[in-house]
Image 1 (cartoon, helix red, strand yellow):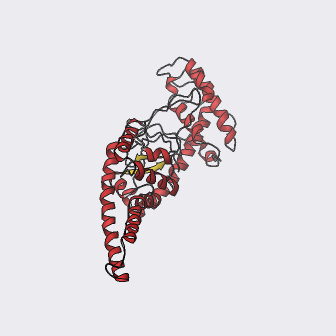
Image 2: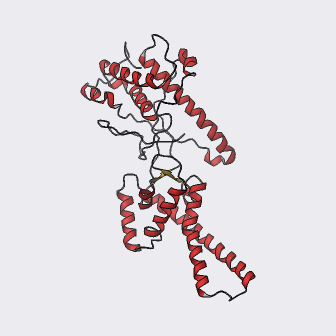
Image 3: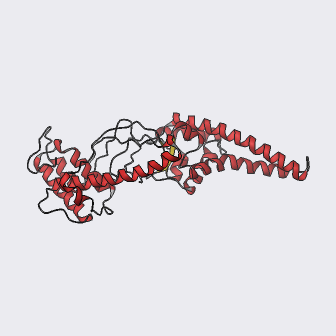
Amino acid sequence: MTAQPPRSAPGRRPAMVGYGADAGLVSGEAVELDIRAARLGSRVLALLVDILTQFALAVILVTCAGILLTSLVGPGALDGAVLRGLQTVGVVLVLVGYPVLFETLNSGRTVGKLAVGLRVVRADGGRVGFRQALTRSLVGVAVEWPGLVLPLLTWAVGVTVMLTDPRGRRLGDLAAGTLVIHDRSPAGTGYLPTMVPPLAGWAATLDLTRLDDGLALAVRQLLSRTGTLTRDARRQLTRSLWAEVAAVTSPPPPPGLPEWAYLAAVLAERHARARRRLARTRSVTSALWPELGAAPAEAPGPAAVRPAAAALVAAQPAVAGSGTSNGSTR
């Protein structure tokens, strides 16, 4: 399951997420995740752990290289140029190779990030690859830490960028299109779609491959906020989303099925399938490393509805506590 940021469109208000959640990622079942972007404090702590790890690796490399060279060519046989070249190779391996290797092979985690509970992901929430890891590492070494180009100035610029960026990204993240998030977030509760029992058999046969995250999120938002809309607004929004969902799903619903029941069944089935996929992934993860088997948190948060009905919602007066009735989407 790949997390993706919610789509933006004219007239759509920013999505609201749970307390402290600011990463702006949406799960495959159209639930906004209560995931926090890593800020300066936690990232500095992870960097300190990584520096200690790199120092230990440098000591090991120097020791092993010294023993190997002594056994091959004898002590004092290498001139200064060769030694400086070997030192340069060692520095590149420690400063660049270490983060690139760990972030590529360990799902965006170096030793420091693993200790603090951080992870590097792409801007769309996907897993980082070699290209992203290499880009952020090269930029980091050049202008952030240790900062080979004007270190004092670039350090100040890097800290300023992290403090002013809405998601705490550093220069390397901006260049590579990545984001560092907290991998251990508190669990949250929110609206969960419920299957209408008579529709369970039909819903199990649905083809949902064309139902994207943006449309599923709009359906979830409508069903979770029906109590704040007037009856006419609910009815028109439900019909609009029903038409969009029916156009990308099959088989068609049973005759005479209310629009709200159809939307709830489709969303519940999509949510159930995503949970089953996630459960299979967690079972494998728990078997390999139990500490990593914790479930990612989901946060409540009503957000804006689809653009097709955004203007209608803005025009209709909110009716707090309106109950269910004919045409209601509850």
